[in-house]
Every structure is written in C-alpha cells, then in structure tokens.
Length: 336
Image 1 (spheres, one colour):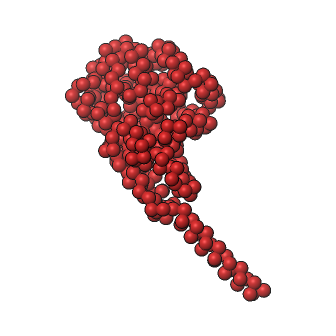
Image 2 (tube, rainbow, N blue to C red):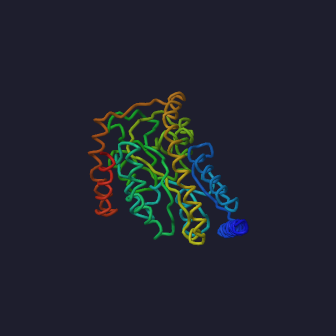
C-alpha cells in the first residue's frame, strides 16, 4: 500500500512538472507596445499600468507591456493604422475615432443614448457591445473590452451655454467623426475636427473656442488653463476600447490570448470604478481652479435632443436598422 502511495506521489509530481513545463512553453518572451493618448497620471494611464502588471504576473514574466502615453505613438487614428499594419501591438482609444474603419462603431456616438453608467455597462458588456466589437476583426483589429471615458460635457471661452442658441458660432473642436461633426453643426456650432493630441495647442492659440470631453479628461489635460466656461450637458456617453493588432493576435498561443483578455477585463473593472470616483472630484477641482460651471436645464437638453432627431436617423441608417433596433431593445431592457 505504501509503495502504491509513493508511486502515486511520484506520478503526481511528474504530471505537475509536465503541466508547468507545457504551460511555460505556451508563453514566449514578448514585448507589447501599448499606446494611449492621455498622460501617465490620468485614469487612462493608471488602468494601462494595472493591465501591464497583470499581464507580466500571469505570464510568469514572459510577456511584458511597455506603456507609452501622452500620444507619443501618435493620435488614435495613427495608432489604429499602426495596429492594422502590425507596426504596434496594442492601444486604448475612443470608439468614435474607429468609425472610419468600422461603421458600426458610430452607434456609440448616438447623442443622449444612455441615462447613466449602469445602462452603459449593461449594453457595452452585453451581446450588442460584443457584436459591434467583433466587426473590427474584419479590418485587422481585435477588440478586448470597453473602458469608460465618461459622459461628455462642453467647455468654451466665449460664453456660458445655457440654451441651444448659445452654441451659435462657437468654434468647437470635435473628434474626427461624422456623427460628432453633424451633431454639433446641427446644434449651431462651428464644428472643427482635430486630433486630441493637437487640442490643447488649438485652445491655447484660440484656433478653436471650445471642446467637449468628460471632466476627468478636462482636468488631466489641463484644459482649465485655456478654458473659462464648463456646461454640464452629458450629451454623449463616450467609451474607450482596448485594441490589439490582429496580425499580432493571430500569432499568440491560446494561453497568451487568455492572459491579455483576463488582464483587459480586470483593467476594465478597475478603470470604470477609478473613472467614476475621479469624475466627482474632477468637477469640484475644475470649479476650484476657476472654471465657471453651469448645468444645462432638462428643458434645454430636451430641445437639443429633439434637434438631433435627424442625426439619430442617420446613425441608424449607417449602422443598419437591425443593429439599431437591437441597441434600442438592449437600452430599454437595461432601463427597466
């Protein structure tokens, strides 16, 4: 009996060793360049750092992530092209800048789509969010998870925006995205498409009067230094998306892919919590730094929503009515 136990113990050790060796063979030494637009101290920077730590830990140190922030690898659009070409491995950026590559991404730019973050999480992490993300693979990109940029709000240097008419003539920087361009033109602004990496300088030199971003980005990018008025509009919920080059992804083992996906999901949960905690603090800090803040009234928000009916119809036509109807059903379900 003792001999049998000893034999089992020896076999157990041998199998464990073989398993560990097989697992080790699943991981090759890899350096992953992960680009992002904001600075290292931002919510984006903190989440990329956590992602990098998770990847290195779970791969036994074989896979290392080099986080490169402050748009050092280029704008979102430039990094997307680098991923498609295989010149860069990973990035996180706005879904809005992907619309030129995958038209279905325009669905997240629908004005006043979500009432709160709970609705956004349910839809983005559900079947509709996955369906839209899977479309990227046809274009050479692999989407892992959605992070939160947040509800977008307006800043400018000309006047407080208390009513729809106050937008008339304001030269407003928007993302390089037709839905954003059409939306703000329809609302009366002079919409100017610019990469985020050029935005601070454009505001500083008065090439544009204003911009729209979540509180966290307004604070971390120091737009308060070059902007006077902030209007709480919550006009669009803006997701970020973590992307991998499909050329790179296809060369990974199943174990390596699982490491990236698990780390991405962990970073998503961290990033959303971090972003939401920071948002309230960021608004208070922006006020403390001298920005004049006003809330857009529900009546004026409703006027804007009504004015944008045509834009919503164009989004539906662009992404396809089947997907649009699936989205509306998913939002209605999340809202119950």
